Image 1 (cartoon, rainbow, N blue to C red):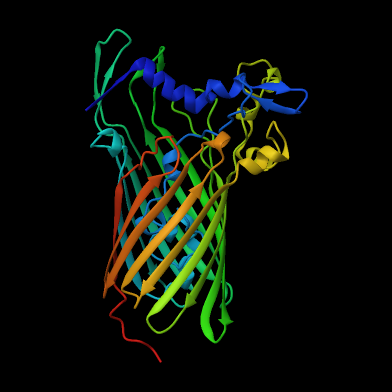
Image 2 (tube, one colour; image 1 turned 90 degrees about the horizontal axis):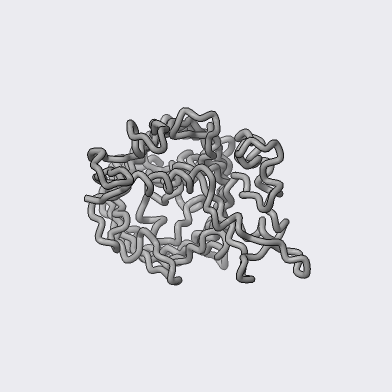
Amino acid sequence: MKKLTTSLLLLVFSLIAFEASAQFNCVFNVSSGEYESPTGGPCVNSIITAVPFLRIVPDARSGAMGDVGVAISPDANSMHYNASKLAFVDKDISVAATYTPWLRALGIPDVYLAYLSGYKQIDDLQTIGMSLRYFSLGTIAFTDENGGSLGDGNPNEFEVAFAYARKLSPKLSVAVTPKFIYSNLASGKTVGNVEITPGIAGAADFSLSYRTPIKMNGKESDLSLGLAVSNLGTKISYTKSINKDFIPSNLGLGAAWNLNIDEFNSITFAADMHKLLVPTPCQGEDCDTDGNGVPDYKEQSMFSGVLSSFGDAPDGFSEELRELMFSMGVEYWYDQQFAVRAGYYSEHATKGNRKFFTVGLGLKYNIFGLNFSYLVPTTNQRNPLDNTLRFTLMFDFGAFAPDEE
């Protein structure tokens, strides 16, 4: 059991609602023409959103490949990355379940992410999918500033998503994924005479995929490209305030090249690039031009925030480039029964500084599949998945279907 005081709870909400205070301590260096920290180092200006659990990679296959997933071969977990890949599946029905321990390196046993997803082919052109993401923050004993008990709670968040994918041609597919988001962090509690309520939002993903075969020295291979705009939706609030926070809208681009080396061996190389479609926190005294106490960038609408996110960084284009996140991964299959995977994820030091290697294994036999992944951090910054083993169970119920000539 964990303890969380009201003051700490207030800090959690302040991080979501008003951004980290360190972000606004940067000063403009006239000689360099850039913002710097008071000590002269890089200006940390991370983009913080509500419901960040939506961006947690939910499955062990991509988790072992540096979190790539936009363009790799489709499976039941494609709902998270790029639902349009489902139009290219070769099984009638598939279901996957993933369990991800969270903060286990800190000895916290009851925080976890669970993910259940699956798809069903309608015909050769159409596929539907569904997923349920559930994030449990464990059991928390709430106390006030004086240590008085406010009772126990079980904060949790979940997302329910549906997808419809369709081929527009033998090589091109599109998909739309509406979703419902619910976040209950401290419902019924009061912080500073403000009642905390569950956060509710609606959103949708829009994605497309392109696949084409390529001949390489007489060997069969295929190139896959993907684009996904995720979590475009309403803003969210945990109080009755009209000031709401952005959810993590995201643009993802991916490419994957699969090479069939021979009858038994194949290898895939993949890379993704992501950018949050959320306004960058501003710097200086010009953040609140109307003087209402709320930074102007937080008062933008969802569509305005998406458009401004490509050119609103205080340090200009150089900072926009620092907001890009990169993933690289490789996957080797032997006889389509045993897989070895590895990958690397990188984020700029001023935008979160997540950098880590990943490794994993995969097993497949008839309708049954099992994937494992393990994360190895490469910086001194702690990661919630440090030295944690994740696993995914998969069931391809179309594996026994007779082949059609």
